[in-house]
Length: 128
Image (cartoon, rainbow, N blue to C red; front, top):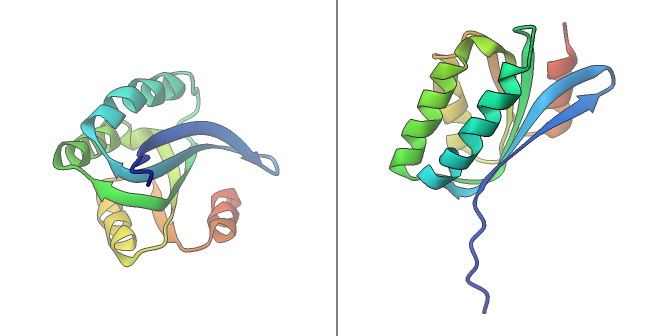
């Protein structure tokens, strides 16, 4: 029996029609070590962005939660880049993810919205 547990964050740049956006995919229960790897990548990617109009799609459908230190890391990362994000669409499959997105919106300068459907999230990101 395989006991391998995948977890972590992947980051990419995607395009839907004519709109570019940052895509993040969270898998499993995120750890402090996951944030130690991904935070410099996010910092570097956002340092190259000239306009403060970054749109983000977060796929949290395979996310199981955070270790305590990782939750703090996530909060700090959000505060650090608070003004970089224009819209953040979070796609999830669980009610607790929807609640977490709502709490995160209190600290974000841009719009944050939760979706159960990724096509709806992409449509919202493309709205002006």
